[in-house]
Length: 120
Image (cartoon, rainbow, N blue to C red):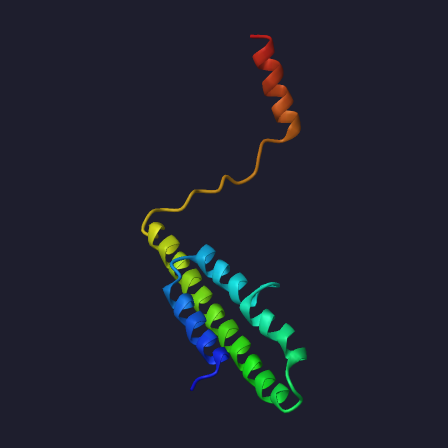
């Protein structure tokens, strides 16, 4: 018989893999690791367990938390990589760059030309 925490881990990993975007992934993170998430609820239940069960459940709880955190980080990196590769595909590197204009006219020259424009 599997422990409910192991079932929770499998369910969380399935939801992480089926997340279609960063917002969906953030919703999964909040559902499991948030303040009122499933993993946090198990942390609150630790105080009701007997002294023999606490180390076993605590170790399993930490493993679940670490596995879910690592899976979320990996999936988030995949989404970022997809976004960056899509942005790079839009850039055409064969086009010439924009030329930089070097320098400006001297302030006295600018005033001289402006005064000529005024008196024309």
